[in-house]
Image (cartoon, rainbow, N blue to C red; front, side):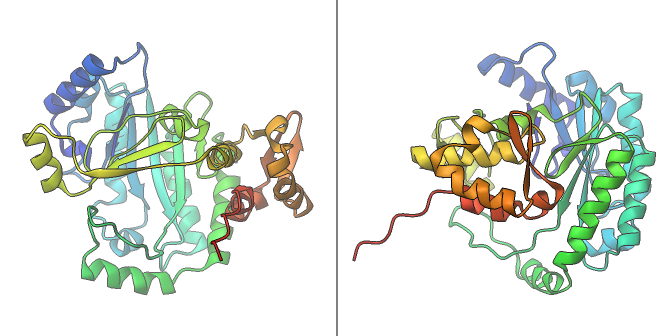
Length: 331
């Protein structure tokens, strides 16, 4: 179970306990299940970690983003590096079994040296898991039932995007892979490294193409058979529907068999476990895989192929070739 999105650490421990009880009643929570809570490390946002642990939370994901004060200001974050350390320490003192830290690179104004400093300072806290994501600022259309960005946020994104650099981002990714691997955190998915046994079970469900259910504004679900469903991110519409005992507004889409097969192949290839040869050699993937091999983007390892580090940096190029070609429009 994963309690994420927004700042769920603003919930009280009693609310979290009620939520876990409801989920167990409706779906069943297995003994020893991974139960993650996303936590903003700010002093006023992180909540009572010990009480969350007593309620049943056994994994904490800390949204640190950076441990450099100037970068946190750029990102509009209210916490400081000391807050990250305090949050992780509180989780350890509470006996939380696994602690993850989220970091961002290619942040405007960030340098390779400041990124290295964030990595070193984060590792000094001895987390079990680190996720490192490139800051994504590309513009995108917003559906009617989703929350549009404010004018100020849109303007900030446009300015920040001009300060980003793909080559610098690639260097930062490679540095993270070297530093985290040397520290004993193994790469297991494009953006994720962990100590043995601390891989995110929740995220691994995504990459395996398995089913998951989702509850809450803006939540997305997948049935494991090609159909995705999502809820409106508009809180007022969401709560109004529930008050009238109706399903919340949202939408759904279904992939055809070819798309579903390609999506599963892409998800498997995101991971260190790789794509089994039996799938990679299928007729519809043969050309894409051959191209990836020729360009040193994938490598053979026993019964699977997996992305090389260069392939991880250029994974979207590989994935685009795995997708089935769209049908031509009628003349």
